[in-house]
Every structure is written in structure tokens, then in C-alpha cells.
Length: 422
Image: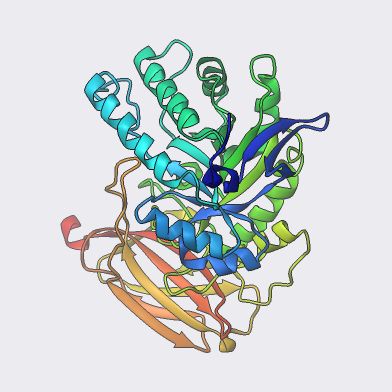
């Protein structure tokens, strides 16, 4: 069958199994995915750090985004949003009219963007809650129809789907019930240490290729918690150390075997439990040590990080794991402990923020208002009064140097209304 001029110009992406393992090929040349999921604000920095790929979650204005990615010399993994499956109350995938409308929408979407030179592969649904082997057949039927539709519409780019964690039952179900997927994308954080063992243990059922489509530090759902269930966040310094350790111990052993690449999370700024948890950059564009760590990983060359580093912050000499309780209007002394004791070279920003804990799973979170902010130099102490309103809060601390680098930490605390006890 002949190809049009447009189709011949389109980069062809395929998968090849070799004696050493699986390889993703772009125009016949092995292409190891090195990149991150994130926004497009820091494409230049991503390219300069040695990455070659960015994952796009938000497809609004996708044409403009793909043009920017292409000009930056990067490639795009593109999410195709589909309704998340809910076995208890599903009303979408049992409705043939809704499924048909979705298929029409996705076909038009693929037709529009399939020939863009930045496209690398498609992710059909992010963490769609794919059912296990005995689960809902109607969802699987609709899902497979969508995979087939994408393949028929675009023969030049692979189709995957992203699952949360290394669930062996879900991996087996996907491989057995949707074999037309070209490979599986895995979002994995704390379970990285079990990745090789878990995937090897089901080799009898599934020994195909995969991409680690999100990886990084422990998520809030995996963290130690206070007595009121506020997750305790690591400092940016500890996060950088954890990224390096996890890549060396758990990702390098599977790269060039079945794993065709990785996408770190999150190259940009993101509100999820806190505005700092996954954010490698600040809202203003300053970057944490995590950016330097990823550059070292992608370039395979240690980068000397000269920015600020943190150990922890204390409130009235208590640490986060002590579940700090404070009375309303009580005087608080916050003390910042940092690795490099030259605080005079840094601007220190303190912020008191209400805890954002009224969100459902997968719900988009909003930026929370700062109810108290303080900036200073030449000291690592701040004395202030606790908020008057009872409830959970966090104290955020950021060290800024003069070169656009930051170190960050925070500590959760709970304010009790003293008058209520009288």
C-alpha cells in the first residue's frame, strides 16, 4: 500500500525485541525515553538537562504545545483522556451512545495530531482502574475498541495505557484481555523497590515491554502521617537523594531489558496535597536540587549542585513526626536546620498555609491561600503567633540563593481552640 507525502514524512515509532531486550525505535533508530511528565514552561531547561521526552497530560491547545516541543528538540508522550472506570457505579461504559461518541471524538483527535513530528506514543487513559481478569467485560470491550481505533487511525505510533503501581493482577489482566496494546506504561513511586521482583514473578503470564511513565519520591499516599492524617513531606534535599538512589538501585537494572525508558514526575509546578510535594520548580521558576539530580541521571555525569540544602525544620523544638499540637494564638518559634550553615547568603521565606485535606481522589486541587508570610535574611529563626482559627496547617520554608535555586521543606501542625476546653 502506498503512502502519502505526509505519511512518509511522519516519524515511525515501533518496538523491536532483541536478544538483549525490547527497544523502542524511532525511524528505525533505538530511542531510550529520558524525560518527565510536566508542563511546558520549562522545555528549554528539560532539553538542556539531557532529556528527550515530555509527557503531556493536558491536551488543551495541543497543536501549539506540540510545535513548542518540536522546536525544543523534544518528543511528546500524549495522554488521551477517557472516563475512569468505576465498577460500583459505572454508567459510562455501559452506555453504547456515550462510548460511540467517545470513539468519534478520539478518532478526530488522532487524525488531527498523528502526523505531527513531535508525537512519540499515545497513552489511552491515565490510571483508568482497568478491571482484573474476572472484572467488567463491557469496559474491556469498549477499551479494546478504542485501542483498535487508534491503531487503525494512526499506524505510525504505539498505543499504551498507564496503570498506578505494580499490581500483578492488573498487569496480568491487561496483558491477557487487551493484548493489542503495544506495551504498558507504569506510574510507580514507593513500589519502585519491588518493580523487578513483581514483574519477574508474573513472567509466565506477561513478559512484555513497558515504560515507567511516572516515577519519583513517595507520594502523599505512601508517606508517614500525623495523628490527624496529614502526610509528612520530605525536604527537597532528601527528595533529591531519594531520586538518585531509586534510579541507581531500581531503574538501572531494568533499563535496556524490558523497560524502554522513564518519565520523572513532575517537571514544573503542581498542587497535589501541597504545592511543593512533586514540584521540581517553584511557581516563579526557581528550581530545586531535584532538577540537578535528574540532569545527572539523564547525562550520566555527576552534576555539582551548589545551591541551598536543608535537613529539617522544628516548631517549638518538635519535629513533624511528633504530631505538633498548638493552641490558638500561642507563640511559636520555628527553627530551620540546613546543611550549609551560610544562611546569610540566602533569602528565607516562611509561609503559613491551611492544610488542603478536603479533596477526593483524582480531584483537581486548588492553590491554597497563604494566611501569613514572612521574609528575612541572616537568620534561621522565625517567631510568630499561631492562627486563631482551629484546624490543620503547614509551615512552609524556602531558601532562595541568588542564582535561581531553592531548597524547601514544611511541617504540619494542628491548632486547637483553647477556649473550647474552658
